[in-house]
Image (tube, rainbow, N blue to C red; front, top):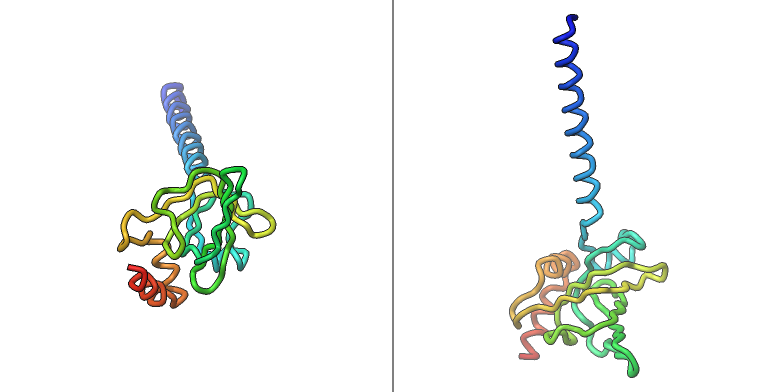
Amino acid sequence: MNAVRKKRLFIVLAIVAGVGIAVALALSALQQNINLFYSPSQIVNGEAPLDTRIRAGGMVEKGSVKRSSDSLQTDFVVSDGVAQVTIRFHGILPDLFREGQGIVAMGKVDDSGMLLADEVLAKHDENYMPPEVKQALEQSGMSKQYEKAGEATQ
């Protein structure tokens, strides 16, 4: 192999190695920013990773909202009709947050199975339900029950 071909080969190998490193770094960064959705049933069954930011959602159980009198901390229970998960949120809840409505919370599950949320998203009108929550309710067979309850409150 002559010197010119050898030099070209090293350049091509360097470019391929550089592109490989760039792709590996990009995939690593993307993987750290993924927030997968878990239903309350999946969280209770231990399928949700601990101390990893996830999205969880369901219907806020009636009578479950407990607000702290001296801080912005709120605890409430979310259900998919099969299992229930307690969510603790410290901050101002959305205006449309209320019992019997679908929500999606983002945060980390602790060792006790409670979701420590840093963000809570509520639906934007009476007919909307987050797609993940709707799918979780359909899988549990409880979507009809929540639709009837929503019609009764209107």
